[in-house]
Image (cartoon, rainbow, N blue to C red; front, side, top):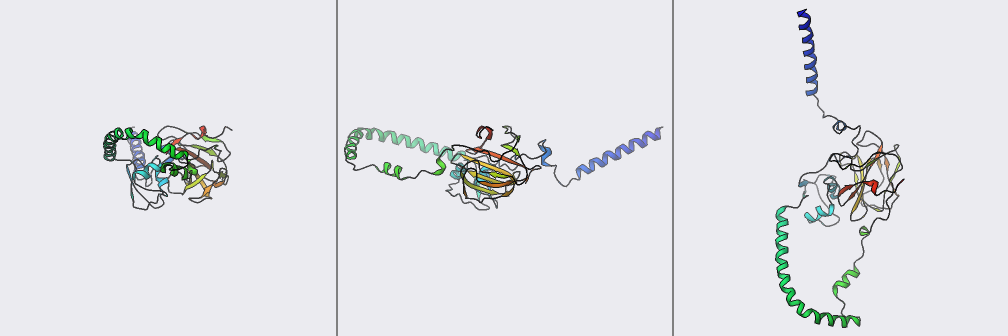
Length: 286
């Protein structure tokens, strides 16, 4: 009997050792889907940038970097003193967050300026009534219009300053996963469909990103609609537009697929000033 138990324990030990060895010898990491308890990545930002600085890589655009950093592209451009069309190059180091020293300097300069302006305003106010009366008389005869008024009238209104009148659904289909505010939650909505289904732009805008550089999104399109809103269309099978291309609401921009996902679907996001918002609150009710 003792020999039997000895043999049984030996076999169990061998099985346990074999299992441990196979786990430790894994060459590839565990599937991403198991980390989130889902059968697919759901378009979650697996490639988020959480550092204060970032070294530009090939294929990056300022919009794709801002997207990964959950930031407004204008803010990053301002910090790095970049002007439109925001040209960047591989190896370039970008600051994603403004340093505290710069903020302190700005505050101190503002205080110093306010002190000077307060002193000068006392002197200015004494003569302001006379100047106002004189300029009013001259303008009454169409003469001596101020330079500020001329500049304001001559500036054309940007298309990207206009509000979005109406959003539209990018594709017809069942929503299989909704937006979540949780840290690892879905940053948009997932809409089921069949491969090749036409994906349409949800509003007028310009394509600011079209590519595969953002891990977890597959073939991705990002569209700028105005100075505040962007929309994204992920996991496409084919991208049918190019960067900088102007498009209208309802234009076909891609075909549905399953790139970087385990299921054919569209992952759709809307961002307001760099932050994810719930698309359902913007899209018309079905």
